[in-house]
Length: 219
Ligand code: DX5
Ligand code: ZN
Image 1 (cartoon, rainbow, N blue to C red):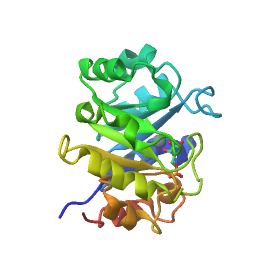
Image 2 (cartoon, helix red, strand yellow):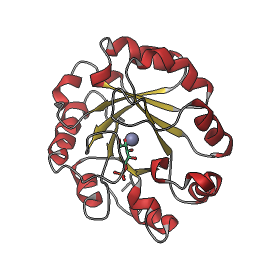
Image 3 (tube, rainbow, N blue to C red):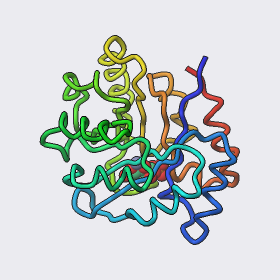
Image 4 (tube, protein in one colour):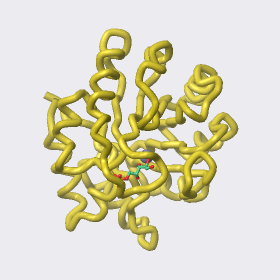
């Protein structure tokens, strides 16, 4: 039995005391730091950019799982490598030449991820899933923390698991948006092996315990 990867999203952290929240994650059972990069074009929100990621990277003792919600991500692949990204995930909907983008991420020595919006079917990944390290299924419309989980995601996880199990059994199937104690077990049962959690972790009374609770799930 294995526990899922837990990747707390710093979007819901306290930016007045970011170093404190980073250290909390360092000391917790979390596996990765999930960093949401928004450009105000691909999504209707702007988050943070290179200087903040570089600062986080200085303090973080675990891999940076960077989720790009930006148009033309190819322009910034090298920059994200230089500020410390370990996993770099681009949106399918933002890439005309997705195969080229994935190769460029790998050529920089990073793990390559592709994210799908809630309306994008899993089948579009059929001819690239064998080349990916991670697929990030959005279970809310990207742009904001604290939104309600979309139930249709369970079906997509199962479809992705079926699509990848022979060709890429080590694929990370990551779910992002509205993850909490009401759906986490069901997500893992459906085939998710990596969970992003923002508000569930940071708005809880004891974020360290909330992370530990997610790490008790098994698949
Ligand atoms: C939303 C981001 C998420 C967000 C998740 O666009 O991709 O990573 O931080 O936040 P919660 O867990 O609160 O839905
Ligand atoms: Zn995210």
